[in-house]
Image (cartoon, rainbow, N blue to C red; front, top):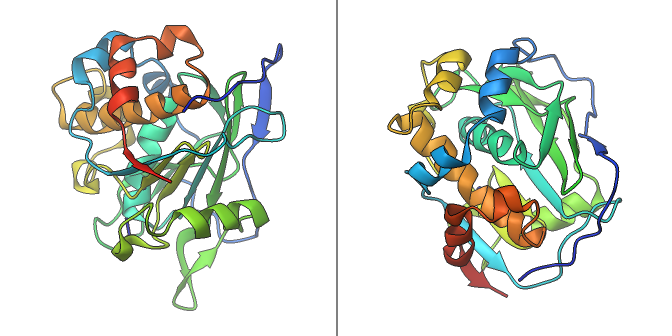
Length: 270
C-alpha cells in the first residue's frame, strides 16, 4: 500500500460537489468532526505555510502534460481514491482537507480510524464518505472503496468508482507514473490530470496514538512533526491545484512558497 496551465471556467456561484456515497457497509464513523478540529484545518495561515514549505513531505509525485481534467461544472477536478482501513490513506486525508480548504469548504466530514488489525493500527483520520465539498475554483470527488470493518474476513466494500474514475486509476496508478511496485496501490490522488500523488508522503506513525484534537492543535506549531508533515504535504497539493486553476485565487496561489513549489514539484511524465 502506499499517493502546464489550463484555462479555468469562471463561475459566479459556489459549486457544491457531493462526494460519492455508495453501498450499505457497516458504519465506521467516530462521529462528526468537531468544529474546533475543522476550524484548525481550515485556518492554516499562509505565513505558517511559508515557514514550513514542503516540511517533511517526501512522496511520489508525477507531473503530467495533458489537458486539465474537469468536472461536470467545467472546473478542474481533484480525484482521491483510498479506503478507510488503509493507514497511509488515513495520513493523506489530513493534508487533503487542509489543501482543499484553501479553495473551498467541506461539510459533513466525520472522524474515522484506520483498521486496528493492520500496520499503524487505529491511525486517527477523517473520512470523505458522505461528505460534500463546495468551491468556486475546483471540484473534488473521492472514492472510499472499503471500510475499516471486516465482514467474513474481508474489509467491507463501501464505494465503487464510476467508469471515469476507474479508468484514471487504472491508467495513472501504474508505471511510468508510479514505481512498478506501487501499481494499483492506495492512496491515489489525481490533481486535474496535472499531477499524480501516489501513496502517503509521511509515515502514519506520526499520528498514531494521538487524538484528532491534539493533531489539529499541533498544526499551529510549525516545529511540530504533525505540522511539518501535514502542512508540508498540503502545500504540495495546493501548488498542484494552483497549476490547474491558473493560479486562482491569487491570495493562495501567489504566495511565494506556493509559487516555488509549483516550479519544482514532481517528475515530468508524458
